[in-house]
Length: 265
Image (cartoon, rainbow, N blue to C red; front, side, top):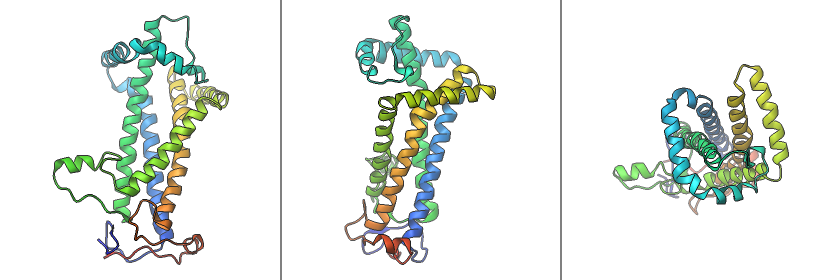
């Protein structure tokens, strides 16, 4: 650990801030890629990997416990979403509508959880591999601290939380926008991508699921990645999320490579 409260994952010589930004951004992009591949992969193969009786049971539980009792409220809020997928099908019974929503929660909720785990794990591994400087981590020992270190906002370092907030805020904000104001754009591209996938032999239902995941979730995910990259640049150049003693550099010094990262002891 250096005298200014920063730590690093290796003992490499001092390197430029520009290089640190590039290394962490590359790791972040790889983590986002792992997240996207994981989420799409889960959606694509979940019904093939998970036994149908188990999927049906999970869907039934979610439907009966979490959806059906609050269906009126859920559908009232869904009315704010203008995508075709969000529209209430009055030709279906309450039970059928609740089960359809529950199936989406099971599939996309599972994909989201796996995607987050892949993203966080890949980021931490990439930073460790490249020796990127990070904010000082907790020194607590024991199993609980190890578990907490994998939970965002609870055990993450300040800089990791800052990057995560920038990423997810833009992710969720753009997701809401694409489902409301830009719903026509989203619907058109879901249909277009679905038709393309069907030409490659993907079933109509599965093509729709994957296309919806791409447009509703992965496009906002990419926009969130851009925001996360900006936060990474701010971290290394301006000390965002770092110790107060972290030096601040001008944009030109970062761009031309003369700004050097804090020394590593």
